[in-house]
Length: 215
Image 1 (cartoon, rainbow, N blue to C red):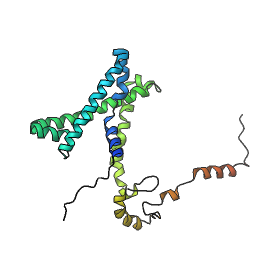
Image 2 (cartoon, one colour; image 1 turned 180 degrees about the vertical axis):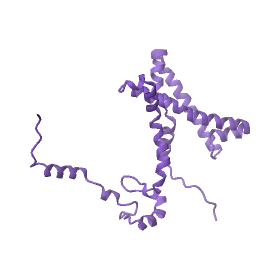
Image 3 (spheres, helix red, strand yellow; image 1 turned 45 degrees about the vertical axis):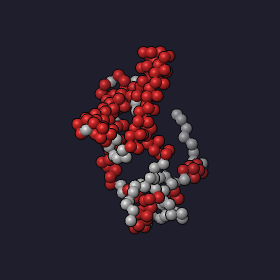
Image 4 (cartoon, rainbow, N blue to C red; image 1 turned 180 degrees about the horizontal axis):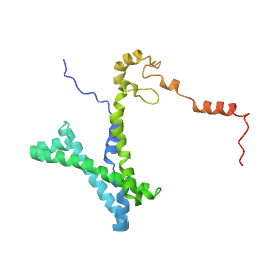
Protein backbone atom coordinates (compact mmCIF):
# COMPACT_ATOMS: atom_id res chain seq x y z
CA UNK A 1 0.00 0.00 0.00
CA UNK A 2 1.42 3.34 -1.04
CA UNK A 3 1.73 6.05 1.63
CA UNK A 4 -0.84 8.87 1.38
CA UNK A 5 0.26 11.99 -0.44
CA UNK A 6 -1.10 15.51 -0.62
CA UNK A 7 -3.18 16.16 -3.71
CA UNK A 8 -1.90 18.98 -5.91
CA UNK A 9 -5.15 20.82 -6.52
CA UNK A 10 -3.56 24.28 -6.92
CA UNK A 11 -2.50 25.07 -10.47
CA UNK A 12 0.08 27.49 -11.82
CA UNK A 13 -2.25 30.47 -12.20
CA UNK A 14 -3.86 30.03 -8.76
CA UNK A 15 -0.44 29.73 -7.11
CA UNK A 16 0.80 32.81 -9.02
CA UNK A 17 -2.24 34.85 -7.95
CA UNK A 18 -1.76 33.77 -4.33
CA UNK A 19 1.91 34.79 -4.28
CA UNK A 20 1.29 38.09 -6.07
CA UNK A 21 -1.53 38.92 -3.66
CA UNK A 22 0.73 38.26 -0.68
CA UNK A 23 3.74 40.17 -2.05
CA UNK A 24 2.16 43.38 -3.38
CA UNK A 25 1.85 45.80 -0.48
CA UNK A 26 1.38 49.52 -0.05
CA UNK A 27 4.97 50.28 -1.09
CA UNK A 28 4.14 49.96 -4.77
CA UNK A 29 1.68 52.85 -4.33
CA UNK A 30 3.77 55.02 -2.01
CA UNK A 31 7.30 54.72 -3.42
CA UNK A 32 6.80 56.18 -6.93
CA UNK A 33 6.02 59.66 -5.59
CA UNK A 34 8.88 59.52 -3.08
CA UNK A 35 11.39 58.38 -5.69
CA UNK A 36 10.21 60.96 -8.21
CA UNK A 37 10.67 63.80 -5.70
CA UNK A 38 14.15 62.60 -4.74
CA UNK A 39 15.71 61.35 -7.97
CA UNK A 40 13.52 62.69 -10.75
CA UNK A 41 13.33 60.74 -14.04
CA UNK A 42 16.26 58.51 -13.06
CA UNK A 43 13.94 56.93 -10.45
CA UNK A 44 12.63 54.69 -13.25
CA UNK A 45 16.08 53.08 -13.38
CA UNK A 46 15.76 52.39 -9.67
CA UNK A 47 12.53 50.52 -10.32
CA UNK A 48 14.30 48.37 -12.92
CA UNK A 49 17.06 47.39 -10.47
CA UNK A 50 14.52 46.76 -7.72
CA UNK A 51 12.45 44.54 -10.00
CA UNK A 52 15.54 42.56 -11.02
CA UNK A 53 16.46 42.04 -7.37
CA UNK A 54 12.92 40.86 -6.58
CA UNK A 55 13.09 38.31 -9.41
CA UNK A 56 16.44 36.99 -8.15
CA UNK A 57 15.03 36.72 -4.63
CA UNK A 58 12.02 34.82 -5.96
CA UNK A 59 14.33 32.39 -7.76
CA UNK A 60 16.28 31.83 -4.54
CA UNK A 61 13.11 30.94 -2.65
CA UNK A 62 11.91 28.75 -5.50
CA UNK A 63 15.15 26.74 -5.44
CA UNK A 64 15.10 26.52 -1.64
CA UNK A 65 11.50 25.31 -1.72
CA UNK A 66 12.48 22.59 -4.15
CA UNK A 67 15.53 21.57 -2.13
CA UNK A 68 13.68 21.63 1.23
CA UNK A 69 10.03 20.76 0.58
CA UNK A 70 8.74 21.45 4.09
CA UNK A 71 6.62 24.04 5.85
CA UNK A 72 8.25 27.00 7.56
CA UNK A 73 9.49 29.12 4.68
CA UNK A 74 12.45 31.40 5.61
CA UNK A 75 12.53 29.94 9.13
CA UNK A 76 13.04 26.40 7.86
CA UNK A 77 15.77 27.44 5.42
CA UNK A 78 17.68 29.57 7.94
CA UNK A 79 17.43 26.88 10.64
CA UNK A 80 18.71 24.20 8.30
CA UNK A 81 21.64 26.32 7.13
CA UNK A 82 22.69 28.21 10.28
CA UNK A 83 21.12 26.44 13.27
CA UNK A 84 18.32 26.95 15.76
CA UNK A 85 19.31 30.43 16.96
CA UNK A 86 19.36 32.00 13.50
CA UNK A 87 16.15 30.18 12.63
CA UNK A 88 14.53 31.63 15.77
CA UNK A 89 15.67 35.14 14.86
CA UNK A 90 14.40 34.73 11.31
CA UNK A 91 10.97 33.59 12.46
CA UNK A 92 10.59 36.47 14.90
CA UNK A 93 11.88 39.02 12.39
CA UNK A 94 9.48 37.75 9.74
CA UNK A 95 6.56 37.89 12.19
CA UNK A 96 7.38 41.46 13.29
CA UNK A 97 7.70 42.57 9.67
CA UNK A 98 4.30 41.03 8.90
CA UNK A 99 2.33 42.95 11.56
CA UNK A 100 4.43 46.13 11.31
CA UNK A 101 3.55 46.31 7.63
CA UNK A 102 -0.06 46.99 8.66
CA UNK A 103 1.00 50.49 9.68
CA UNK A 104 2.27 51.20 6.16
CA UNK A 105 -1.00 49.89 4.70
CA UNK A 106 -3.01 52.21 6.99
CA UNK A 107 -0.84 55.22 6.05
CA UNK A 108 -1.20 54.48 2.34
CA UNK A 109 -4.95 54.02 2.62
CA UNK A 110 -5.46 57.31 4.49
CA UNK A 111 -3.07 59.17 2.20
CA UNK A 112 -4.93 58.21 -0.96
CA UNK A 113 -8.36 58.64 0.63
CA UNK A 114 -7.41 62.19 1.73
CA UNK A 115 -7.49 63.25 -1.93
CA UNK A 116 -11.27 62.67 -1.93
CA UNK A 117 -11.90 63.28 1.79
CA UNK A 118 -9.47 66.02 2.97
CA UNK A 119 -10.53 65.83 6.64
CA UNK A 120 -8.99 62.37 6.87
CA UNK A 121 -5.55 63.85 6.25
CA UNK A 122 -5.89 66.79 8.62
CA UNK A 123 -7.69 65.33 11.65
CA UNK A 124 -5.51 62.81 13.48
CA UNK A 125 -8.25 60.90 15.29
CA UNK A 126 -10.39 60.55 12.19
CA UNK A 127 -7.39 59.47 10.14
CA UNK A 128 -6.45 56.83 12.71
CA UNK A 129 -9.96 55.41 12.86
CA UNK A 130 -10.30 55.31 9.07
CA UNK A 131 -6.84 53.78 8.71
CA UNK A 132 -7.39 50.88 11.08
CA UNK A 133 -11.06 50.34 10.23
CA UNK A 134 -10.71 48.30 7.02
CA UNK A 135 -8.07 46.10 8.67
CA UNK A 136 -10.64 44.97 11.24
CA UNK A 137 -12.96 43.45 8.65
CA UNK A 138 -11.03 40.18 8.72
CA UNK A 139 -11.10 40.14 12.52
CA UNK A 140 -14.88 40.62 12.57
CA UNK A 141 -15.37 37.87 10.01
CA UNK A 142 -13.13 35.56 12.03
CA UNK A 143 -15.13 36.05 15.22
CA UNK A 144 -18.66 36.13 13.84
CA UNK A 145 -18.29 34.15 10.62
CA UNK A 146 -17.46 30.92 12.43
CA UNK A 147 -21.19 30.32 12.98
CA UNK A 148 -21.66 29.77 9.23
CA UNK A 149 -21.05 26.13 8.41
CA UNK A 150 -18.53 25.52 5.65
CA UNK A 151 -20.91 23.59 3.39
CA UNK A 152 -23.12 26.67 3.08
CA UNK A 153 -20.29 28.79 1.64
CA UNK A 154 -20.15 28.32 -2.13
CA UNK A 155 -19.61 30.38 -5.25
CA UNK A 156 -22.34 32.54 -6.79
CA UNK A 157 -23.11 29.69 -9.18
CA UNK A 158 -23.56 27.22 -6.31
CA UNK A 159 -20.36 25.28 -7.00
CA UNK A 160 -17.88 23.84 -4.52
CA UNK A 161 -14.42 22.35 -5.17
CA UNK A 162 -14.74 18.81 -6.49
CA UNK A 163 -12.88 17.16 -3.54
CA UNK A 164 -15.56 18.50 -1.15
CA UNK A 165 -18.61 17.29 -3.07
CA UNK A 166 -18.52 13.72 -1.72
CA UNK A 167 -18.71 15.00 1.86
CA UNK A 168 -21.17 17.81 1.25
CA UNK A 169 -23.92 15.77 -0.46
CA UNK A 170 -25.14 14.21 2.78
CA UNK A 171 -25.21 17.57 4.56
CA UNK A 172 -27.11 19.24 1.73
CA UNK A 173 -29.60 16.37 1.55
CA UNK A 174 -30.26 16.65 5.32
CA UNK A 175 -31.04 20.36 4.91
CA UNK A 176 -33.11 19.95 1.76
CA UNK A 177 -30.61 21.72 -0.48
CA UNK A 178 -31.03 20.45 -4.05
CA UNK A 179 -28.13 19.45 -6.28
CA UNK A 180 -27.59 20.55 -9.84
CA UNK A 181 -28.27 17.95 -12.53
CA UNK A 182 -24.52 17.67 -13.13
CA UNK A 183 -23.91 17.03 -9.41
CA UNK A 184 -21.21 19.73 -9.10
CA UNK A 185 -23.04 22.14 -6.83
CA UNK A 186 -26.36 23.30 -5.44
CA UNK A 187 -29.14 25.10 -7.27
CA UNK A 188 -28.60 28.47 -5.60
CA UNK A 189 -28.57 30.27 -8.95
CA UNK A 190 -32.07 29.00 -9.74
CA UNK A 191 -33.50 30.81 -6.72
CA UNK A 192 -31.71 34.11 -7.22
CA UNK A 193 -33.95 37.15 -7.63
CA UNK A 194 -34.20 38.47 -11.20
CA UNK A 195 -33.56 42.18 -10.64
CA UNK A 196 -34.42 43.10 -14.23
CA UNK A 197 -37.80 41.36 -13.98
CA UNK A 198 -38.52 42.96 -10.61
CA UNK A 199 -37.73 46.41 -12.00
CA UNK A 200 -39.94 45.83 -15.02
CA UNK A 201 -42.83 44.63 -12.85
CA UNK A 202 -42.43 47.65 -10.58
CA UNK A 203 -42.55 50.06 -13.50
CA UNK A 204 -45.70 48.42 -14.88
CA UNK A 205 -47.39 48.43 -11.47
CA UNK A 206 -46.67 52.12 -10.86
CA UNK A 207 -47.26 53.38 -14.41
CA UNK A 208 -50.84 54.56 -13.65
CA UNK A 209 -49.96 56.28 -10.37
CA UNK A 210 -49.91 60.11 -10.41
CA UNK A 211 -46.42 61.54 -10.42
CA UNK A 212 -45.05 63.77 -7.70
CA UNK A 213 -45.08 67.49 -8.40
CA UNK A 214 -42.66 69.91 -6.86
CA UNK A 215 -43.83 72.94 -4.90
